[in-house]
Image (cartoon, rainbow, N blue to C red; front, side):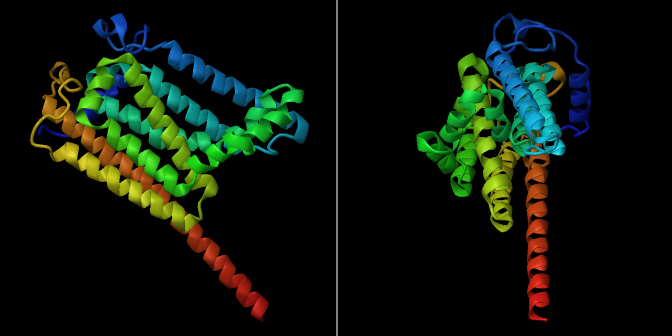
Length: 301
């Protein structure tokens, strides 16, 4: 394997890449690095931002700025939205169609950066406020009760969310399915959608529904199984993703090197995110136990 300084040069070139054209598929493959404008991506992104901004504005006009949704939470949502838009529309997406390493970076941004930031922004608190007054209460009831509410509660149970997130990651990294998604627009969109949705369920379960000790355990388990998958890609003796790595030579990499670097991206940076979050929850758990002991001792005195 060649020196690992090569991914740094690749990332620098990617960030500086200019251009504007269509997203995945079509004639864009023949051009250089470019921004994407796939309506199946742009429209949902635009609507999600519009609903959040309108809803947060309406909530703050009613309750006061920072109430219901705190200022830092709104900033977190905007940061997550920018990360998601950058991953799916910037030249990184174009590079991901040609270089496995860039594709893996794109996926890690979606699942380990954008998703937790979006969850921290409390989008479900802002959403109903974006609708006309007469529809707000029925919409809130639909989100919290009935079949939709039941489905949401099931999908965001910590164990269920962890299993769904892990299943999405492992199934889509089956070589035949991953290569098919690279070659087929519809499968590619479904791949990204399943990564995003399963990550949102997972981080919602961790941040909104889990005890800190439970969240730390689920995050550690996710770090372990994604690390195993990353290690498999890194140490595989042969190329497993023929279509995804077919053009690696255009950027000075062999197909096997491209696969190895993609595995390292999943294994190390991705693992650091899950490990860091797990440690944060452990710290929160220890802090809560300390407060409980202090309060118990004070009551005893």
